[in-house]
Image (cartoon, rainbow, N blue to C red):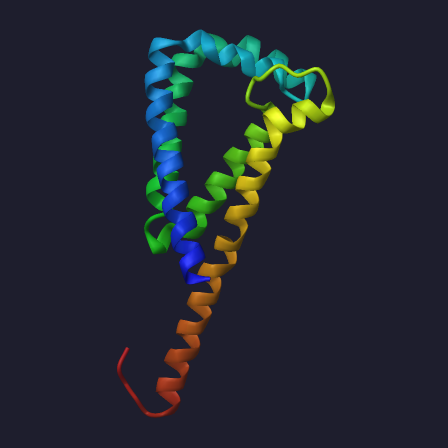
Length: 155
């Protein structure tokens, strides 16, 4: 599990920090490119919200999104914040699953392939990190109790 956690943490740190930088750049250079996300949103009200609120404020929102993604990317590297960063990434990816990637599709199957499956896979890769931290903490607590029971006063 340790190698898996290390690889996934490094991969997602890279993905999220790079994504944050990309949002900073695209939000300035091609802000209208974000309009396509309204076309693949699963919920009609979300498409309307995207057009009426997100697009008029896309400059600010891409900065906020960039900061959010870079923070999650940095957070997943530090062992103390892995779980919090993982939850932040999962929340973002669930949102992207609902909104989609903006690729046009002719059928539900095509939409799932183009706009949804990769984020669902990414969430599945992250879920084990939520329990890995807990196991590490619990094993550390057992180790401390064992030392106390043996009369070892080191902490």
